[in-house]
Amino acid sequence: MSHVYKRSISCHWTFEVEVEGMLWVHRWDRRAFGRRRHKSVEVEDMLWVHRWDGRAFGRRRHKSDVHTAEPLRVCVTGAAGQIAYSLLYQLAKGDVFGQDQPVILILLDIPVMMGALGGVAMELQDCALPLLKETIATDDPKVAFKDIDLAIMVGAMPRREGMLRKDLLKANVKIFEVQGKAIDEVAKKDVRVVVVGNPANTNCLVMSQYAKTIPKENFSCLTRLDQNRAQAQIAARLNVKNTEVRNVIIWGNHSSTQFPDASHAKMTNGDSVTERTVQKRGAAVIAARKFSSAVSAAKAICDHVRDLWNGTKEGEWTSMGVISDGNSYGVPDNVMYSFPVRIKNRKWEFVNGLSVSDFARSKMEATANELVEERDTAFQFLSTE
Ligand SMILES: NC(=O)c1ccc[n+]([C@@H]2O[C@H](COP(=O)([O-])OP(=O)(O)OC[C@H]3O[C@@H](n4cnc5c(N)ncnc54)[C@H](O)[C@@H]3O)[C@@H](O)[C@H]2O)c1
Image 1 (cartoon, rainbow, N blue to C red):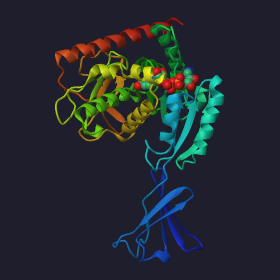
Image 2: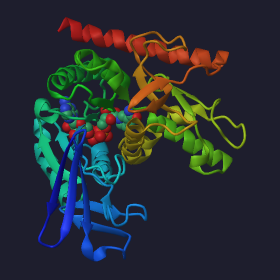
Image 3: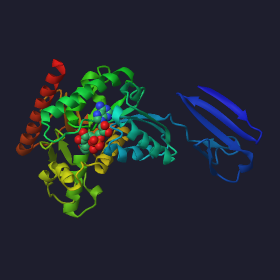
Image 4: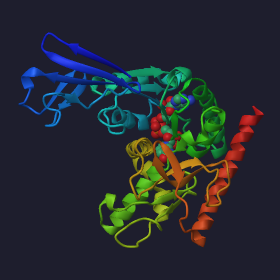
Protein backbone atom coordinates (compact mmCIF):
# COMPACT_ATOMS: atom_id res chain seq x y z
CA MET A 1 0.00 0.00 0.00
CA SER A 2 1.46 3.39 -0.94
CA HIS A 3 0.29 6.97 -0.29
CA VAL A 4 1.16 10.10 -2.24
CA TYR A 5 0.11 13.68 -1.31
CA LYS A 6 0.27 16.25 -4.09
CA ARG A 7 -0.51 19.94 -4.30
CA SER A 8 -1.13 21.64 -7.62
CA ILE A 9 -0.86 25.35 -8.40
CA SER A 10 -4.65 25.66 -8.47
CA CYS A 11 -4.75 24.80 -4.76
CA HIS A 12 -6.10 21.29 -5.32
CA TRP A 13 -4.78 18.80 -2.83
CA THR A 14 -4.88 15.22 -3.90
CA PHE A 15 -4.19 12.15 -1.90
CA GLU A 16 -3.49 8.96 -3.80
CA VAL A 17 -3.57 5.59 -2.18
CA GLU A 18 -2.98 2.27 -3.86
CA VAL A 19 -4.85 -0.65 -2.36
CA GLU A 20 -4.73 -4.12 -3.87
CA GLY A 21 -3.65 -2.89 -7.26
CA MET A 22 -6.27 -0.11 -7.51
CA LEU A 23 -5.55 3.56 -7.33
CA TRP A 24 -7.99 5.63 -5.26
CA VAL A 25 -7.65 9.36 -5.65
CA HIS A 26 -9.06 11.75 -3.06
CA ARG A 27 -9.10 15.36 -4.00
CA TRP A 28 -10.21 18.55 -2.32
CA ASP A 29 -10.52 22.12 -3.28
CA ARG A 30 -10.28 25.12 -0.94
CA ARG A 31 -12.86 27.15 -2.75
CA ALA A 32 -15.51 24.51 -2.32
CA PHE A 33 -14.80 24.19 1.38
CA GLY A 34 -17.89 24.32 3.53
CA ARG A 35 -20.21 25.18 0.71
CA ARG A 36 -20.90 22.50 -1.79
CA ARG A 37 -20.99 19.09 -0.28
CA HIS A 38 -21.14 17.15 -3.47
CA LYS A 39 -19.29 17.67 -6.65
CA SER A 40 -18.34 15.66 -9.67
CA VAL A 41 -15.81 16.50 -12.32
CA GLU A 42 -14.87 14.76 -15.49
CA VAL A 43 -11.11 14.53 -15.90
CA GLU A 44 -9.48 12.46 -18.60
CA ASP A 45 -12.62 10.45 -19.34
CA MET A 46 -13.16 9.56 -15.71
CA LEU A 47 -15.88 10.71 -13.42
CA TRP A 48 -14.48 11.66 -10.04
CA VAL A 49 -17.15 11.98 -7.40
CA HIS A 50 -16.23 13.97 -4.31
CA ARG A 51 -18.23 13.84 -1.14
CA TRP A 52 -17.63 14.88 2.35
CA ASP A 53 -19.64 14.65 5.48
CA GLY A 54 -19.87 16.58 8.73
CA ARG A 55 -17.55 14.33 10.65
CA ALA A 56 -14.74 14.56 8.16
CA PHE A 57 -15.25 18.29 7.55
CA GLY A 58 -12.17 20.37 8.31
CA ARG A 59 -9.86 17.43 8.25
CA ARG A 60 -10.61 15.31 5.31
CA ARG A 61 -12.44 17.89 3.30
CA HIS A 62 -12.89 15.99 0.18
CA LYS A 63 -13.18 12.36 -0.69
CA SER A 64 -13.53 10.44 -3.91
CA ASP A 65 -15.22 7.09 -4.02
CA VAL A 66 -14.91 6.28 -7.70
CA HIS A 67 -11.94 4.38 -8.99
CA THR A 68 -10.78 3.49 -12.45
CA ALA A 69 -11.54 -0.03 -13.51
CA GLU A 70 -9.16 -1.85 -15.81
CA PRO A 71 -10.85 -2.37 -19.20
CA LEU A 72 -12.31 -5.84 -19.68
CA ARG A 73 -10.96 -7.62 -22.73
CA VAL A 74 -13.95 -9.21 -24.45
CA CYS A 75 -13.65 -11.25 -27.64
CA VAL A 76 -16.67 -11.84 -29.87
CA THR A 77 -16.26 -14.42 -32.63
CA GLY A 78 -18.41 -14.42 -35.75
CA ALA A 79 -18.17 -10.67 -35.31
CA ALA A 80 -19.14 -9.88 -38.91
CA GLY A 81 -22.37 -11.88 -38.60
CA GLN A 82 -25.89 -10.80 -37.83
CA ILE A 83 -26.06 -11.64 -34.10
CA ALA A 84 -22.79 -9.85 -33.43
CA TYR A 85 -24.11 -6.78 -35.23
CA SER A 86 -26.76 -6.38 -32.52
CA LEU A 87 -24.58 -7.65 -29.69
CA LEU A 88 -21.44 -5.52 -29.99
CA TYR A 89 -23.19 -2.21 -29.44
CA GLN A 90 -24.88 -3.44 -26.27
CA LEU A 91 -21.57 -4.71 -24.87
CA ALA A 92 -19.78 -1.47 -25.72
CA LYS A 93 -22.32 0.92 -24.27
CA GLY A 94 -22.35 -0.50 -20.76
CA ASP A 95 -25.57 -2.53 -20.85
CA VAL A 96 -23.87 -5.66 -19.59
CA PHE A 97 -20.86 -4.80 -17.44
CA GLY A 98 -22.14 -1.51 -16.05
CA GLN A 99 -21.60 2.17 -16.69
CA ASP A 100 -18.22 2.35 -14.94
CA GLN A 101 -16.62 -0.63 -16.68
CA PRO A 102 -14.57 0.18 -19.80
CA VAL A 103 -14.17 -2.55 -22.41
CA ILE A 104 -11.80 -3.49 -25.19
CA LEU A 105 -13.66 -5.38 -27.91
CA ILE A 106 -11.77 -7.90 -29.99
CA LEU A 107 -13.61 -9.03 -33.10
CA LEU A 108 -12.75 -12.36 -34.69
CA ASP A 109 -14.02 -13.64 -38.02
CA ILE A 110 -12.64 -15.64 -40.95
CA PRO A 111 -10.26 -14.07 -43.56
CA VAL A 112 -12.93 -13.66 -46.25
CA MET A 113 -15.01 -11.53 -43.86
CA MET A 114 -12.23 -9.06 -42.97
CA GLY A 115 -13.64 -6.35 -45.26
CA ALA A 116 -17.07 -6.50 -43.64
CA LEU A 117 -15.49 -6.73 -40.21
CA GLY A 118 -13.59 -3.50 -40.89
CA GLY A 119 -16.96 -1.85 -41.50
CA VAL A 120 -18.28 -3.11 -38.17
CA ALA A 121 -15.19 -1.72 -36.42
CA MET A 122 -15.71 1.65 -38.16
CA GLU A 123 -19.31 1.79 -37.01
CA LEU A 124 -18.35 1.04 -33.42
CA GLN A 125 -15.84 3.87 -33.56
CA ASP A 126 -18.49 6.17 -35.04
CA CYS A 127 -20.72 5.55 -32.02
CA ALA A 128 -18.16 7.52 -29.91
CA LEU A 129 -18.95 5.42 -26.87
CA PRO A 130 -17.19 6.53 -23.68
CA LEU A 131 -16.66 3.00 -22.34
CA LEU A 132 -15.22 1.51 -25.51
CA LYS A 133 -11.46 1.89 -25.13
CA GLU A 134 -10.32 -0.01 -28.19
CA THR A 135 -11.60 -2.22 -31.00
CA ILE A 136 -9.37 -4.84 -32.56
CA ALA A 137 -10.48 -6.76 -35.68
CA THR A 138 -8.60 -9.93 -36.62
CA ASP A 139 -8.82 -13.33 -38.29
CA ASP A 140 -6.21 -14.89 -36.00
CA PRO A 141 -7.63 -16.71 -32.94
CA LYS A 142 -4.37 -16.29 -31.02
CA VAL A 143 -4.52 -12.52 -31.44
CA ALA A 144 -8.22 -12.51 -30.62
CA PHE A 145 -7.94 -14.54 -27.41
CA LYS A 146 -4.77 -12.90 -26.05
CA ASP A 147 -5.25 -12.09 -22.34
CA ILE A 148 -9.03 -11.97 -22.62
CA ASP A 149 -11.46 -12.00 -19.69
CA LEU A 150 -14.44 -13.21 -21.71
CA ALA A 151 -15.03 -14.93 -25.04
CA ILE A 152 -18.47 -14.94 -26.65
CA MET A 153 -18.27 -17.64 -29.30
CA VAL A 154 -20.90 -16.74 -31.89
CA GLY A 155 -18.95 -17.71 -35.03
CA ALA A 156 -19.88 -21.05 -36.54
CA MET A 157 -20.41 -22.72 -39.88
CA PRO A 158 -24.04 -22.14 -40.92
CA ARG A 159 -26.23 -25.01 -42.06
CA ARG A 160 -26.48 -24.92 -45.84
CA GLU A 161 -29.29 -26.34 -47.89
CA GLY A 162 -29.08 -30.11 -48.16
CA MET A 163 -26.44 -30.31 -45.41
CA LEU A 164 -26.92 -33.21 -43.00
CA ARG A 165 -26.86 -32.52 -39.28
CA LYS A 166 -23.80 -34.79 -39.07
CA ASP A 167 -21.90 -32.70 -41.64
CA LEU A 168 -22.73 -29.54 -39.75
CA LEU A 169 -21.52 -31.13 -36.54
CA LYS A 170 -18.29 -32.24 -38.18
CA ALA A 171 -17.48 -28.78 -39.55
CA ASN A 172 -18.26 -27.03 -36.32
CA VAL A 173 -16.52 -29.25 -33.82
CA LYS A 174 -13.31 -28.81 -35.84
CA ILE A 175 -13.64 -25.04 -35.47
CA PHE A 176 -14.15 -25.37 -31.72
CA GLU A 177 -11.22 -27.75 -31.37
CA VAL A 178 -8.88 -25.20 -32.97
CA GLN A 179 -10.33 -22.33 -30.95
CA GLY A 180 -10.22 -24.35 -27.71
CA LYS A 181 -6.50 -24.94 -28.18
CA ALA A 182 -5.88 -21.29 -29.00
CA ILE A 183 -7.76 -19.97 -25.98
CA ASP A 184 -5.90 -22.41 -23.77
CA GLU A 185 -2.60 -21.06 -25.02
CA VAL A 186 -3.13 -17.31 -24.78
CA ALA A 187 -6.20 -16.31 -22.70
CA LYS A 188 -6.24 -15.55 -18.99
CA LYS A 189 -6.68 -18.75 -17.02
CA ASP A 190 -9.84 -17.42 -15.36
CA VAL A 191 -11.42 -16.50 -18.71
CA ARG A 192 -15.15 -17.16 -19.03
CA VAL A 193 -16.36 -18.64 -22.32
CA VAL A 194 -19.94 -18.47 -23.56
CA VAL A 195 -20.73 -20.57 -26.64
CA VAL A 196 -23.59 -19.51 -28.92
CA GLY A 197 -22.69 -21.01 -32.33
CA ASN A 198 -24.64 -24.21 -33.01
CA PRO A 199 -24.70 -27.00 -32.06
CA ALA A 200 -23.95 -24.83 -29.01
CA ASN A 201 -23.85 -27.50 -26.28
CA THR A 202 -21.52 -29.87 -28.10
CA ASN A 203 -19.32 -27.07 -29.47
CA CYS A 204 -18.96 -25.87 -25.89
CA LEU A 205 -18.00 -29.34 -24.67
CA VAL A 206 -15.42 -29.74 -27.44
CA MET A 207 -13.91 -26.34 -26.72
CA SER A 208 -13.66 -27.08 -23.00
CA GLN A 209 -11.96 -30.42 -23.69
CA TYR A 210 -9.27 -28.80 -25.79
CA ALA A 211 -8.69 -25.91 -23.40
CA LYS A 212 -7.08 -28.27 -20.95
CA THR A 213 -5.74 -25.71 -18.47
CA ILE A 214 -8.98 -23.75 -18.11
CA PRO A 215 -11.57 -25.14 -15.66
CA LYS A 216 -14.57 -26.74 -17.40
CA GLU A 217 -16.84 -24.74 -15.10
CA ASN A 218 -15.69 -21.57 -16.91
CA PHE A 219 -17.52 -22.71 -20.04
CA SER A 220 -21.24 -22.31 -20.60
CA CYS A 221 -23.55 -22.27 -23.58
CA LEU A 222 -26.59 -20.23 -24.40
CA THR A 223 -30.09 -21.48 -23.65
CA ARG A 224 -31.22 -18.11 -22.36
CA LEU A 225 -32.98 -17.30 -25.61
CA ASP A 226 -35.20 -20.35 -25.06
CA GLN A 227 -35.78 -19.27 -21.47
CA ASN A 228 -36.69 -15.74 -22.57
CA ARG A 229 -39.04 -17.10 -25.22
CA ALA A 230 -40.80 -19.30 -22.67
CA GLN A 231 -41.02 -16.46 -20.17
CA ALA A 232 -42.48 -14.06 -22.73
CA GLN A 233 -45.02 -16.60 -23.95
CA ILE A 234 -46.23 -17.39 -20.45
CA ALA A 235 -46.47 -13.68 -19.66
CA ALA A 236 -48.50 -13.05 -22.82
CA ARG A 237 -50.84 -15.91 -22.01
CA LEU A 238 -51.41 -14.72 -18.49
CA ASN A 239 -51.56 -11.10 -19.56
CA VAL A 240 -48.87 -10.09 -17.06
CA LYS A 241 -45.56 -8.29 -17.46
CA ASN A 242 -42.57 -10.36 -18.62
CA THR A 243 -40.83 -9.57 -15.36
CA GLU A 244 -43.62 -11.16 -13.34
CA VAL A 245 -42.67 -14.59 -14.69
CA ARG A 246 -39.55 -16.08 -13.13
CA ASN A 247 -37.62 -19.31 -12.83
CA VAL A 248 -38.72 -21.00 -16.04
CA ILE A 249 -36.23 -23.79 -16.71
CA ILE A 250 -34.76 -25.05 -19.96
CA TRP A 251 -33.38 -28.55 -19.53
CA GLY A 252 -30.88 -30.15 -21.90
CA ASN A 253 -29.90 -29.36 -25.45
CA HIS A 254 -30.45 -26.13 -27.41
CA SER A 255 -32.37 -28.10 -30.02
CA SER A 256 -35.93 -29.27 -30.47
CA THR A 257 -35.44 -31.96 -27.78
CA GLN A 258 -34.96 -29.29 -25.10
CA PHE A 259 -37.49 -29.39 -22.29
CA PRO A 260 -38.95 -26.01 -21.30
CA ASP A 261 -40.32 -26.51 -17.79
CA ALA A 262 -42.64 -24.04 -16.12
CA SER A 263 -43.55 -26.25 -13.18
CA HIS A 264 -41.27 -24.31 -10.83
CA ALA A 265 -41.94 -20.89 -12.32
CA LYS A 266 -43.34 -18.18 -10.10
CA MET A 267 -46.50 -16.86 -11.69
CA THR A 268 -49.72 -15.23 -10.69
CA ASN A 269 -51.63 -18.38 -11.65
CA GLY A 270 -50.65 -21.94 -12.46
CA ASP A 271 -50.92 -22.03 -16.27
CA SER A 272 -48.22 -24.08 -17.93
CA VAL A 273 -45.97 -23.13 -20.82
CA THR A 274 -46.75 -24.18 -24.38
CA GLU A 275 -43.59 -26.20 -24.84
CA ARG A 276 -43.86 -26.83 -28.54
CA THR A 277 -44.06 -23.14 -29.26
CA VAL A 278 -40.72 -22.56 -27.54
CA GLN A 279 -39.05 -25.56 -29.15
CA LYS A 280 -40.13 -24.51 -32.64
CA ARG A 281 -39.83 -20.77 -32.18
CA GLY A 282 -36.43 -20.54 -33.90
CA ALA A 283 -37.88 -22.22 -37.00
CA ALA A 284 -40.89 -19.90 -36.90
CA VAL A 285 -38.62 -16.82 -36.90
CA ILE A 286 -36.64 -18.19 -39.86
CA ALA A 287 -39.85 -18.91 -41.78
CA ALA A 288 -41.10 -15.37 -41.20
CA ARG A 289 -37.88 -13.37 -41.52
CA LYS A 290 -35.84 -15.65 -43.82
CA PHE A 291 -32.96 -15.19 -41.37
CA SER A 292 -32.46 -16.76 -37.98
CA SER A 293 -33.06 -14.92 -34.69
CA ALA A 294 -30.55 -12.12 -34.19
CA VAL A 295 -31.81 -9.28 -31.98
CA SER A 296 -33.42 -11.70 -29.53
CA ALA A 297 -30.28 -13.88 -29.55
CA ALA A 298 -28.07 -10.85 -28.88
CA LYS A 299 -30.36 -9.75 -26.04
CA ALA A 300 -30.26 -13.26 -24.58
CA ILE A 301 -26.44 -13.30 -24.74
CA CYS A 302 -26.39 -10.01 -22.82
CA ASP A 303 -28.75 -11.48 -20.19
CA HIS A 304 -26.58 -14.60 -19.89
CA VAL A 305 -23.33 -12.64 -19.54
CA ARG A 306 -24.85 -10.09 -17.15
CA ASP A 307 -25.94 -12.88 -14.81
CA LEU A 308 -22.55 -14.55 -15.16
CA TRP A 309 -20.79 -11.31 -14.23
CA ASN A 310 -23.11 -9.89 -11.59
CA GLY A 311 -24.83 -12.99 -10.23
CA THR A 312 -28.47 -14.08 -10.18
CA LYS A 313 -30.97 -12.23 -8.01
CA GLU A 314 -31.95 -13.51 -4.59
CA GLY A 315 -34.59 -16.25 -4.96
CA GLU A 316 -34.08 -16.55 -8.71
CA TRP A 317 -32.17 -18.80 -11.02
CA THR A 318 -31.37 -18.92 -14.70
CA SER A 319 -30.80 -21.68 -17.26
CA MET A 320 -27.53 -22.26 -19.04
CA GLY A 321 -25.70 -25.15 -20.58
CA VAL A 322 -22.95 -26.23 -18.17
CA ILE A 323 -20.84 -29.32 -17.59
CA SER A 324 -23.11 -31.99 -16.13
CA ASP A 325 -20.53 -33.58 -13.79
CA GLY A 326 -21.89 -33.94 -10.25
CA ASN A 327 -25.52 -32.99 -11.00
CA SER A 328 -28.31 -34.47 -8.88
CA TYR A 329 -30.85 -35.03 -11.68
CA GLY A 330 -29.40 -38.23 -13.13
CA VAL A 331 -28.02 -36.56 -16.27
CA PRO A 332 -24.89 -38.46 -17.46
CA ASP A 333 -21.51 -36.83 -16.81
CA ASN A 334 -19.49 -35.02 -19.45
CA VAL A 335 -22.17 -33.31 -21.49
CA MET A 336 -22.97 -29.59 -21.60
CA TYR A 337 -26.57 -29.77 -20.45
CA SER A 338 -28.84 -26.84 -19.68
CA PHE A 339 -29.72 -26.76 -15.96
CA PRO A 340 -31.16 -24.19 -13.60
CA VAL A 341 -28.17 -22.53 -11.90
CA ARG A 342 -27.52 -19.82 -9.31
CA ILE A 343 -24.53 -17.58 -9.85
CA LYS A 344 -22.37 -15.71 -7.36
CA ASN A 345 -18.88 -14.26 -7.77
CA ARG A 346 -18.84 -15.45 -11.40
CA LYS A 347 -19.30 -19.06 -10.31
CA TRP A 348 -22.43 -21.07 -10.94
CA GLU A 349 -23.94 -23.88 -8.89
CA PHE A 350 -26.74 -26.30 -9.72
CA VAL A 351 -30.16 -25.58 -8.25
CA ASN A 352 -30.68 -28.94 -6.58
CA GLY A 353 -33.70 -30.59 -5.04
CA LEU A 354 -36.40 -29.52 -7.51
CA SER A 355 -39.19 -32.08 -7.88
CA VAL A 356 -39.28 -33.86 -11.24
CA SER A 357 -42.48 -35.52 -12.47
CA ASP A 358 -42.42 -38.72 -14.55
CA PHE A 359 -43.33 -36.68 -17.62
CA ALA A 360 -40.48 -34.24 -16.97
CA ARG A 361 -38.05 -37.10 -16.28
CA SER A 362 -38.78 -38.69 -19.67
CA LYS A 363 -38.24 -35.36 -21.45
CA MET A 364 -35.01 -34.72 -19.56
CA GLU A 365 -33.74 -38.17 -20.49
CA ALA A 366 -34.60 -37.75 -24.17
CA THR A 367 -32.62 -34.53 -24.48
CA ALA A 368 -29.72 -36.05 -22.47
CA ASN A 369 -29.65 -39.03 -24.83
CA GLU A 370 -29.40 -36.70 -27.81
CA LEU A 371 -26.49 -34.86 -26.20
CA VAL A 372 -24.63 -38.09 -25.44
CA GLU A 373 -25.09 -39.22 -29.05
CA GLU A 374 -23.98 -35.83 -30.38
CA ARG A 375 -20.92 -35.90 -28.11
CA ASP A 376 -19.92 -39.41 -29.19
CA THR A 377 -20.29 -38.53 -32.88
CA ALA A 378 -18.31 -35.32 -32.41
CA PHE A 379 -15.42 -37.07 -30.71
CA GLN A 380 -15.29 -39.68 -33.47
CA PHE A 381 -14.61 -36.87 -35.94
CA LEU A 382 -12.02 -35.36 -33.68
CA SER A 383 -10.19 -38.51 -32.77
CA THR A 384 -10.02 -39.95 -36.28
CA GLU A 385 -8.47 -36.91 -37.94
N1 LIG B 1 -27.60 -20.85 -28.80
C1 LIG B 1 -28.55 -20.06 -29.26
O1 LIG B 1 -29.52 -19.77 -28.57
C2 LIG B 1 -28.47 -19.48 -30.64
C3 LIG B 1 -29.45 -18.57 -31.05
C4 LIG B 1 -29.36 -18.02 -32.34
C5 LIG B 1 -28.32 -18.41 -33.19
N2 LIG B 1 -27.41 -19.31 -32.75
C6 LIG B 1 -26.26 -19.71 -33.59
O2 LIG B 1 -25.32 -18.66 -33.59
C7 LIG B 1 -24.49 -18.76 -34.74
C8 LIG B 1 -24.32 -17.41 -35.42
O3 LIG B 1 -25.56 -16.95 -35.90
P1 LIG B 1 -25.62 -15.66 -36.86
O4 LIG B 1 -27.05 -15.48 -37.19
O5 LIG B 1 -24.84 -14.53 -36.32
O6 LIG B 1 -24.87 -16.25 -38.15
P2 LIG B 1 -24.15 -15.47 -39.33
O7 LIG B 1 -23.95 -16.49 -40.42
O8 LIG B 1 -24.80 -14.18 -39.63
O9 LIG B 1 -22.71 -15.14 -38.69
C9 LIG B 1 -21.79 -16.12 -38.37
C10 LIG B 1 -20.40 -15.51 -38.50
O10 LIG B 1 -19.47 -16.46 -38.03
C11 LIG B 1 -18.34 -16.38 -38.86
N3 LIG B 1 -17.50 -17.57 -38.74
C12 LIG B 1 -17.64 -18.76 -39.35
N4 LIG B 1 -16.62 -19.58 -39.00
C13 LIG B 1 -15.86 -18.88 -38.14
C14 LIG B 1 -14.66 -19.17 -37.45
N5 LIG B 1 -14.05 -20.34 -37.59
N6 LIG B 1 -14.13 -18.21 -36.66
C15 LIG B 1 -14.73 -17.03 -36.51
N7 LIG B 1 -15.85 -16.68 -37.15
C16 LIG B 1 -16.42 -17.60 -37.95
C17 LIG B 1 -18.94 -16.19 -40.25
O11 LIG B 1 -17.97 -15.70 -41.16
C18 LIG B 1 -20.03 -15.19 -39.96
O12 LIG B 1 -19.57 -13.86 -40.04
C19 LIG B 1 -25.16 -19.83 -35.62
O13 LIG B 1 -24.49 -21.06 -35.42
C20 LIG B 1 -26.57 -19.91 -35.07
O14 LIG B 1 -27.15 -21.17 -35.32
C21 LIG B 1 -27.46 -19.84 -31.50
